[in-house]
View 1 (cartoon, rainbow, N blue to C red):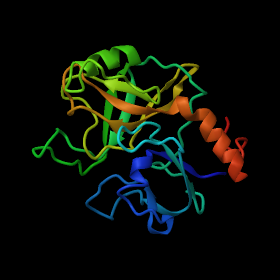
View 2 (cartoon, rainbow, N blue to C red):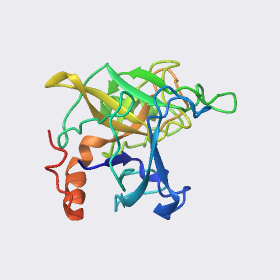
View 3 (tube, helix red, strand yellow):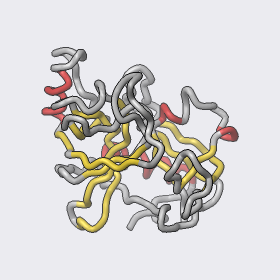
Amino acid sequence: MVEIILVKYENVGLPFPVNINDIKIRAGEWDTQTQNERIPHQERNIERKIVHNHFTKGNLYNDVALLILDRPLTKTRSIGTVCLPQDNQHFDSRECFATGWGKDRFGQEGQYAVILKKLQLPLVQNQPCQDALRKTRLGNSFILHRSFTCAGGEPGLDTCTGDGGSPLVCPDPSNPNRYLQVGIVAWGIGCGENQVPGVYTDVANFRNWIDLKLQETGIGIDSYIV
């Protein structure tokens, strides 16, 4: 069983330590204020970090990285796996979910979550998303990069500051009983503003890259294709 975590590169490059020996992952966290939880969390060291070679810091293009753990996690009721979409697979669902401990509103008035939150969000196709974002301070010349996808746009319901790197999962069109990781929280204009979707790294756009990098490590793709 291979242990891989898909994250946004900004969260494992800058401002966090570059030395992977200084980075750990924690799985199964729920309440950030206590260690005494009904289902304990698990921590692992990072054996290797693989970042996208075309990541652009300023505008977060290709904001994705792979973390190879030093040893497997143990599956529990609070720790599991999520399937990857196929290369450039198209999604159009209003029943996607994002999780995280980010703020409940944008700015200094916002409070970070203590308990892991879950939000149901609709996907927004790229052209309508670009049109909506052009009505913000980004202006009429803004072009949504192909490495992004969008979700949200409903008032008061959005990922926010502190949620960066969190997963966006949607039902598998061929099997609605399971979910695929469609996005990774990347950036947004404010939080929860009406008709202003949030922007996510488009995981399906990087499926071939993920497979290639794992093959280069010697892990191969047979260990996680279902």
